[in-house]
Length: 149
Image 1: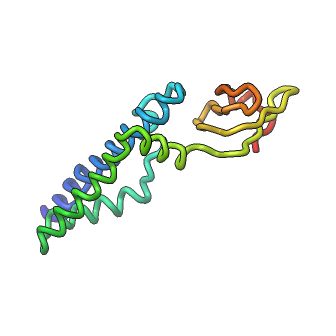
Image 2 (image 1 turned 120 degrees about the vertical axis):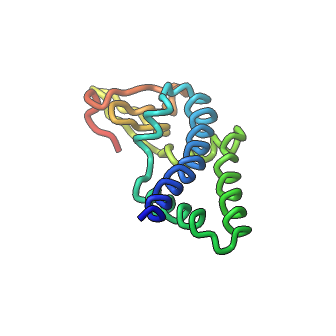
Protein backbone atom coordinates (compact mmCIF):
# COMPACT_ATOMS: atom_id res chain seq x y z
CA UNK A 1 0.00 0.00 0.00
CA UNK A 2 2.82 2.41 0.80
CA UNK A 3 4.43 1.77 -2.61
CA UNK A 4 1.18 2.63 -4.40
CA UNK A 5 0.92 5.83 -2.37
CA UNK A 6 4.56 6.58 -3.17
CA UNK A 7 3.86 6.15 -6.90
CA UNK A 8 0.90 8.55 -6.76
CA UNK A 9 2.66 11.20 -4.66
CA UNK A 10 6.00 11.02 -6.47
CA UNK A 11 4.35 11.01 -9.88
CA UNK A 12 2.06 13.87 -8.93
CA UNK A 13 4.90 16.07 -7.72
CA UNK A 14 7.44 15.19 -10.41
CA UNK A 15 4.78 15.45 -13.11
CA UNK A 16 3.89 19.01 -12.08
CA UNK A 17 7.40 20.42 -12.66
CA UNK A 18 7.39 20.10 -16.47
CA UNK A 19 3.83 21.45 -16.69
CA UNK A 20 4.66 24.44 -14.46
CA UNK A 21 7.74 25.28 -16.55
CA UNK A 22 5.71 25.03 -19.76
CA UNK A 23 3.05 27.33 -18.31
CA UNK A 24 5.57 29.91 -17.14
CA UNK A 25 7.16 30.09 -20.59
CA UNK A 26 3.81 30.52 -22.31
CA UNK A 27 2.67 33.13 -19.78
CA UNK A 28 5.86 35.17 -20.12
CA UNK A 29 6.38 34.97 -23.86
CA UNK A 30 2.84 34.75 -25.25
CA UNK A 31 0.31 36.33 -22.89
CA UNK A 32 2.58 39.04 -21.49
CA UNK A 33 4.07 39.77 -24.92
CA UNK A 34 0.58 40.33 -26.36
CA UNK A 35 -0.63 42.22 -23.28
CA UNK A 36 -3.60 39.91 -22.72
CA UNK A 37 -3.52 40.29 -18.94
CA UNK A 38 -4.16 36.72 -17.87
CA UNK A 39 -3.04 35.44 -14.48
CA UNK A 40 -0.84 32.35 -14.33
CA UNK A 41 -3.00 30.44 -11.85
CA UNK A 42 -6.13 30.90 -14.01
CA UNK A 43 -4.25 29.66 -17.07
CA UNK A 44 -2.80 26.73 -15.14
CA UNK A 45 -6.13 25.46 -13.82
CA UNK A 46 -8.26 26.28 -16.87
CA UNK A 47 -5.94 24.65 -19.39
CA UNK A 48 -4.52 21.74 -17.42
CA UNK A 49 -5.18 18.60 -19.49
CA UNK A 50 -6.08 16.36 -16.55
CA UNK A 51 -6.80 13.42 -18.84
CA UNK A 52 -3.16 13.59 -20.02
CA UNK A 53 -1.63 14.58 -16.69
CA UNK A 54 -2.94 11.65 -14.64
CA UNK A 55 -1.44 8.88 -16.83
CA UNK A 56 1.79 10.82 -17.25
CA UNK A 57 2.06 11.38 -13.49
CA UNK A 58 1.46 7.69 -12.79
CA UNK A 59 4.03 6.71 -15.43
CA UNK A 60 6.61 9.07 -13.91
CA UNK A 61 5.78 7.79 -10.42
CA UNK A 62 6.28 4.19 -11.47
CA UNK A 63 9.60 5.07 -13.12
CA UNK A 64 10.88 6.77 -9.97
CA UNK A 65 9.56 4.30 -7.39
CA UNK A 66 10.33 1.12 -9.36
CA UNK A 67 13.55 2.01 -11.22
CA UNK A 68 14.72 -0.88 -13.36
CA UNK A 69 16.99 1.16 -15.57
CA UNK A 70 18.05 4.19 -13.62
CA UNK A 71 19.86 5.80 -16.58
CA UNK A 72 16.71 5.66 -18.73
CA UNK A 73 14.61 7.22 -15.95
CA UNK A 74 17.04 10.09 -15.44
CA UNK A 75 17.44 10.65 -19.20
CA UNK A 76 13.66 10.59 -19.78
CA UNK A 77 12.92 13.05 -16.98
CA UNK A 78 15.74 15.44 -17.94
CA UNK A 79 14.54 15.37 -21.56
CA UNK A 80 10.99 16.13 -20.39
CA UNK A 81 12.24 19.03 -18.26
CA UNK A 82 14.39 20.36 -21.12
CA UNK A 83 11.45 20.27 -23.51
CA UNK A 84 9.33 22.15 -20.98
CA UNK A 85 12.08 24.66 -20.21
CA UNK A 86 12.49 25.44 -23.89
CA UNK A 87 9.38 27.64 -23.66
CA UNK A 88 11.43 29.98 -21.48
CA UNK A 89 13.24 30.95 -24.70
CA UNK A 90 11.08 33.79 -26.07
CA UNK A 91 10.59 32.73 -29.73
CA UNK A 92 9.75 29.16 -28.79
CA UNK A 93 7.45 30.15 -25.92
CA UNK A 94 5.57 32.49 -28.24
CA UNK A 95 5.29 29.81 -30.94
CA UNK A 96 3.94 27.24 -28.46
CA UNK A 97 1.42 29.80 -27.19
CA UNK A 98 0.31 30.52 -30.75
CA UNK A 99 -0.07 26.82 -31.51
CA UNK A 100 -2.14 26.21 -28.39
CA UNK A 101 -4.34 29.30 -28.24
CA UNK A 102 -4.57 31.15 -31.58
CA UNK A 103 -7.33 30.57 -34.12
CA UNK A 104 -6.73 32.19 -37.53
CA UNK A 105 -9.56 33.57 -39.69
CA UNK A 106 -11.97 34.14 -36.81
CA UNK A 107 -15.08 36.32 -37.13
CA UNK A 108 -17.05 38.01 -34.35
CA UNK A 109 -20.43 39.66 -34.86
CA UNK A 110 -20.74 42.29 -32.12
CA UNK A 111 -23.87 44.44 -32.04
CA UNK A 112 -24.11 45.66 -35.65
CA UNK A 113 -20.44 45.31 -36.60
CA UNK A 114 -18.49 42.38 -37.97
CA UNK A 115 -14.85 41.94 -36.86
CA UNK A 116 -12.44 39.57 -38.58
CA UNK A 117 -8.97 38.61 -37.51
CA UNK A 118 -6.95 36.20 -35.43
CA UNK A 119 -8.45 34.98 -32.17
CA UNK A 120 -5.50 35.20 -29.79
CA UNK A 121 -7.21 33.74 -26.75
CA UNK A 122 -10.65 32.80 -25.47
CA UNK A 123 -11.33 32.52 -21.76
CA UNK A 124 -14.61 31.90 -19.99
CA UNK A 125 -15.73 35.57 -20.21
CA UNK A 126 -13.88 37.21 -23.11
CA UNK A 127 -12.60 36.86 -26.65
CA UNK A 128 -9.27 38.53 -27.50
CA UNK A 129 -9.24 39.24 -31.25
CA UNK A 130 -6.38 40.77 -33.25
CA UNK A 131 -8.46 42.78 -35.71
CA UNK A 132 -7.23 42.70 -39.32
CA UNK A 133 -8.32 46.27 -40.11
CA UNK A 134 -7.40 48.04 -36.86
CA UNK A 135 -4.26 45.91 -36.35
CA UNK A 136 -4.79 45.85 -32.59
CA UNK A 137 -6.21 43.44 -30.04
CA UNK A 138 -9.85 44.01 -29.13
CA UNK A 139 -11.40 42.45 -26.04
CA UNK A 140 -15.03 41.32 -26.45
CA UNK A 141 -17.27 40.22 -23.59
CA UNK A 142 -18.92 36.93 -24.50
CA UNK A 143 -22.32 38.18 -23.31
CA UNK A 144 -22.25 41.01 -25.86
CA UNK A 145 -21.18 38.88 -28.84
CA UNK A 146 -24.04 37.83 -31.10
CA UNK A 147 -22.09 35.26 -33.08
CA UNK A 148 -18.51 33.97 -33.12
CA UNK A 149 -17.10 31.63 -35.75
